[in-house]
Amino acid sequence: QRATGEARGLFLLEFMKESGFAASTFAPEDMRLGRDLLRALASDPGIALVSTNLYDEEEGELLLPPYTIVERAGLRIGITAASAPMEEVRRLAEEAGMRFEDPADRLPGVLQELDGKTDMIVLLARMELEDAEAIAMESAGLIDVVVMGGQKSGRGGRSYRETGGATYVVAGNRGQALGVARVAIDGREVQAVVGEELVLSRDWPENPEVLASVTEFQRNLNEMMKEHAVTNARSRQAPDGHYYLGAENCASCHVEEYRRWLETPHSDAFQTLVDVDSEALPECFQCHVTGHGDAAGYIPFLETETPLINVQCEVCHGKGTEHARDGSYGKSLLMESCATCHDPENSPDFDPEVYWLMMEH
Image (cartoon, rainbow, N blue to C red; front, side):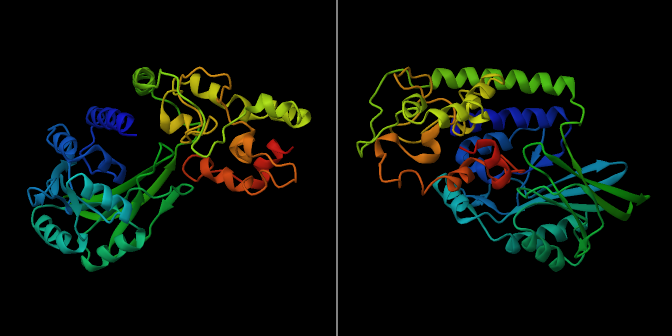
């Protein structure tokens, strides 16, 4: 999703600058944007992008500065970052002319340097919690706060947990939670740090200006993706000769099942995207259509005799042309197919047994 990823990255970076963010680091998915764009983003003076172990392969040097120092409430705060990504992310980085080194090789020296210049050190950690804890333990108390990125948010509440002298907070993802570290100071000396996670439920009040900005961006991005959508018709037949029939064809035999489907959220899943200007965004519509990613499946804005918007029968049961009358058709997918879209990131409250009651037929 490079097209939307680049647009989102630029928007978020601009928003972070306007909101007063002091520093950040690249997320694993940002590797898809390529070295040149990441380097250009890093040169923006409005926000410090830091990393101790992301290297430019061609130049043989760090792609980003290893740290930044900001002053808040009279306190000099050093902010650094380290990542320990999975193999797939490492491969993406290498394909883009970058590489991740072991954070344990570079980070200790950076922490020692910051210790002589700051009153407090914050580590932005893109890694598993155990790895971050090991780094904190080895740093002998130099790290005051570890902000964990890419971690599943919890259920909120305060945390006094300290490992290696550091307090841990989760940055949260998809706007579902916010990690807060409250620091008690005496002059320029840190006395205590309390971590807290704020769960941003639907009851949390919206900021009208932010909401307007996000809505406008979403609308513009959606229109941009419409222009990129396929406009020339092509065969919907997959290489194996099978194709999708569509729910209305299924209804010719499975009348009651079709009527039941019409009563479920799956039957108007695509409209929920239209309502929020997201129907042209691949990362959104892939779970609101039938056959996305399949040569015979949904193609944005391509008019066909068999509309494949919404989550139709064949998403769970397989292509209708594979239908067998021995009773075996579609039995192997079913609940397994749910997890494709109802994952922890997109559907954190998903419970197969509860959700099935809404779809049972």
